[in-house]
Length: 119
Image (tube, rainbow, N blue to C red; front, side, top):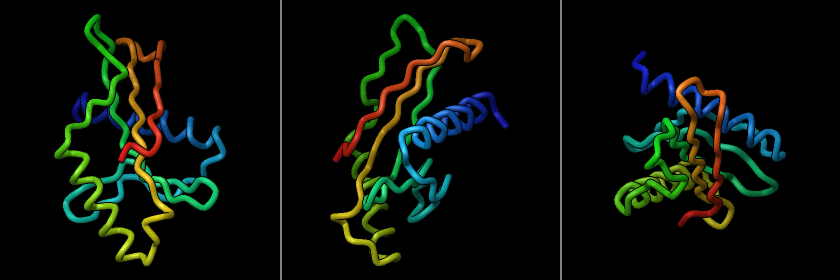
């Protein structure tokens, strides 16, 4: 496993713990559909939430801003539609969230920002 993959897995685990602490129910991790992968899928009340997690090392130029491009968002949206069609889930009952995590070199100081319903 590369250092980047290990950091990503660490961030996904941290995001999962954060969401469970906010009363989300865990559904799946690293779910693949149509050549796209959702880092996490959770349930909150009656909403199925697809979560993209972006974990980065903190540098002076680091930011918690949304790092997703328009084409990445479009691909995620298409994958959500495919998932909803395959699993007979209403699009009114799904949303896409983004969690951005910045961590210091030792992963002891962490900043996390949760963007809800990003499209």
